[in-house]
Structures are given as C-alpha cells and as structure tokens.
Amino acid sequence: MLEIQKDNILKNYQTKNLIIFKKLKEMILDGQLKPKQRIIIRKISSNLGVSETPVREALKMLQSEDLVLLNHHIGYMVNDLNISKVKNILVIRFSLEALAIKLSIENISKKEIDELSNKIREMKNCLKKKDCVTYGILNRQFHQIIYRSAKNAYLYKLINDLWDKSERMRSIFVLVPSAIKRSLNEHVALLEALNRKDKERIIQVFEAHTTNFFSSLDKYIKKEKNQTLTIG
Image (tube, rainbow, N blue to C red; front, side, top):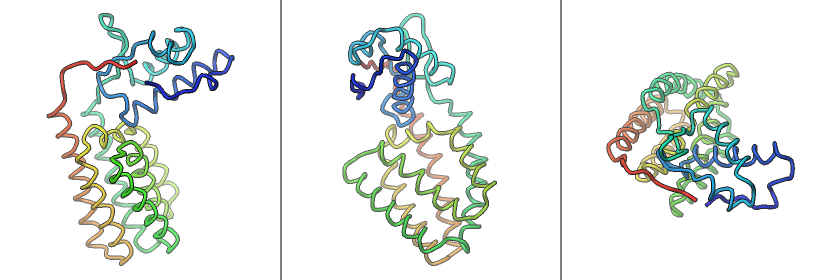
C-alpha cells in the first residue's frame, strides 16, 4: 500500500501527477514494487483519495522511463529488469570505479574515512533490522564517498551518471536479501584496506565485490518467479 498521506496530494493537478510518479518510481527503484508486479489504478486512487486520472498520468510517465509497461490483458505492471542492458552498463561502471578507488588511496582524508565508518554502522543496523531498502541507499552513499575522494570531478560525474542509468540495481538487496551480509563484509574489508592504504588488498576486495554482485544478479534470474504479483 502506498505510503502517501492524502494531505500531501495538493489541489494542483500537475502536482498530483508528480507526487504519485515520484513515489511509485522510488518504490520501483528500491524494490518495494518488484518486477512483474501489477499496479491496480483503482486501488491506488482509492488509497490516495484522488481520481484515477493523475494515477494514469503518473503511470504514463513511468512507462516513458521503461519502469512500467501496459499489458492490455492485465493492465499496468512493473517492468522486468533488463539484465543484459544492466550488465553492459555495470561492466563500464565497475571499470571506472576501480580507477576511482586506486586514485582515492592516496587522496582519501581522515574525515572521509570517518564518514565511511559511519555508513558502515548504519549498514550494520540495516542488516540487524533486515531493512533491505535503506541498505541499498546507503550502499551507493558509501561508494560515493570513496569516488569523491579520488579528487577527479570528471571521473566522479561519469560514475554517477552510469549509476543513475543502473539505479534499479539498488533493488538487488530486496530481490536477493542474502546478498546483504556478504556485501557488508566486503564494505568493511574495503574500509579497513583504505585505512591502511593497502593497494593490493583494496583491488582484491573490490574485484571480489564486483564478481559477487554479478553472482547476485544471476541468483535473482534463477529464482525469478513466473507468477504475477498484485498491489493495492
């Protein structure tokens, strides 16, 4: 059920569209709405206390971003992950990230190390609470701190642009919850290596991290269900 308060749906028609669009998009990106899950317009409009029109408009906007598709037999549903497209993006992104990590070894500051330590504490708390959604958000924030410390604005922008294009991968921690513990251990190892400025260990941990991410993707593919889920 959508967590949008009726008071937040303002009278302005366009605002209603955007609020619903942003909320649904975020729920798709973080995995609360899963691939192939049905989205029933009537139930959403009823939950929000709005007409079906702004909901339909929001879904059209999501469709233009390939996040939902319209099946004329069952209605709107969350689009499946395009694994081939995502893997092509990740190959490039991970290569740039490896470069950024190497540059960060000599440039990372004590303040940034402390920021990474704080993120690790938050991520451990997510693991304890089994909060896969927040973990996915913290995961990107953790990596951004490292790549920012490389002190190369062009490289940092390229990585972030590619991350935006593969943002649905944030949902992997919801789709494959078992990936969180392994991911957290790799983040801890990466932080320890950065703190010691151990270049060989850093590269080793990052390569294992990327390999395991692809493994999680493959695991999702294997366990993917054919049944269609329904929300409302």
